[in-house]
Amino acid sequence: MRKMVKSWQLYVLLAPALLYFLIFKYIPMYGVVIAFKNFRPIDGIFGSQWVGFDHFIRFFNSYYFWDLIWNTLSISLYQLLLFPIPIIVALAFNELRAGKFKKSAQTITYAPHFISTVVFVGMIIAFLDPATGIINHFIQLLGFDPIDFMASPKWFKTIYVFSGQWQELGWSAIIYLAALAGVDPQLHEAAKVDGATRFQRIWYVNIPGIMPTIIILLILNMGSMLAVGFEKILLMQNPLNLTSSNIIATYVYEIGLLNGQFSYSTAVGLFNAVINFIILITFNRLARRTGTSLW
Image 1 (cartoon, rainbow, N blue to C red):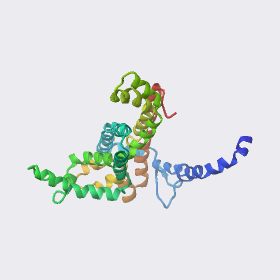
Image 2: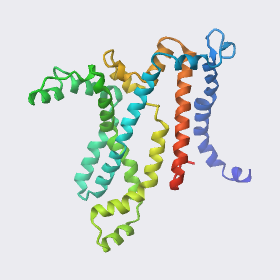
Image 3: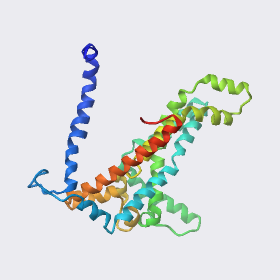
Image 4: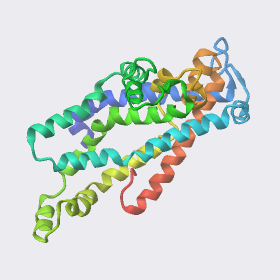
């Protein structure tokens, strides 16, 4: 208590963040109980009928269950396959010596991150339009027929993942660039003396130096395996690509907000959160063997 009183200014600065998480994150958690009830707004959360795991059983037995799991999981795994790309980009930027070229390249790769999701999806639709899109113009120049990408379920996941990689590539590389800035320059000097090439210095000095950062970000990505954001998918979604674009998040939005099945949608969302939590704990425990973990 004496330490707290002595450093009260630091606790005052910390208070807004603590209040934010308490008011908007922790207190609303009591609402999760409606996943186990037949919630009716007129009865309130505690006055609604208790139904136990009925909503979970309904979801597990539903026609959409395996399609939702597969679509969500396959998109996440697809994104995970591209996880090394920002690392490669950061290593490449770190090796650039021309100041103006380096700054220009970084600006070009960072810029898409600041485009709003709505505008970005509008750009994707415009680029891929079968009649006026620049991609289909290029395909026709090669002698092939135009492709209606947005109406094809087989193209949806590729478009979603690669467009997301394009938008977030430079921004994701910033973290690795910051980690590379902390690599001891004396290690590079020693490697040069030993006759190491630039590639060998990247492989034996830079990559081991940023490995803790790579592991931490990989754990965080694994912890959000089933938490694919729904905003962009919802904007790209249409009745023709629904077999590939319908994921847990969009399903929760549809049944919860559009159809008013609050208890059922909460149960589905809670199931998703619990699975992500289990995956996070599992991979954090595995990563602990390397000496780096979240906790």
